[in-house]
Length: 150
Image 1 (cartoon, rainbow, N blue to C red):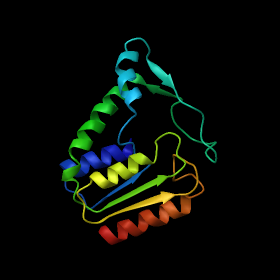
Image 2 (cartoon, rainbow, N blue to C red):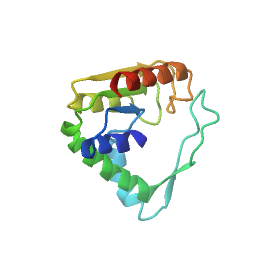
Image 3 (cartoon, rainbow, N blue to C red):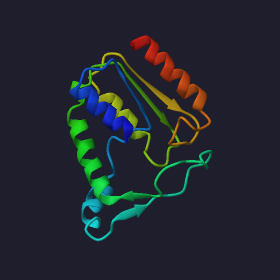
Image 4 (tube, one colour):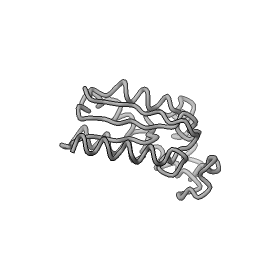
């Protein structure tokens, strides 16, 4: 969710660059069809358990469906405004992420108008990449990007 907010900010405010980590860019068709209807009958949708190497994941155990509907709207706005993302961009995502498919990062990367952009696909399965086995690579890559673009 933070990556979507960062991209929205880059589309609407001056900034030196954007880093996304496991950012959703598009939900599946089935999810976008079901959630707006399901939210009329249920308040939340239970998440799957934490992924391997993330036993200490902190967060809600459910997705509030009204919030998820708003998130879908925001993601659509961000997708439509990617031509306005011209700042340097670093996209990081785990190939084995079970919460957000890695194809989201490729689509996000391809849609950005940035001339200076880089995608880093991580090898270990994890959604919260700052806590996974690739943690050191993620942090070093982020610091390097910040030093180059600040």
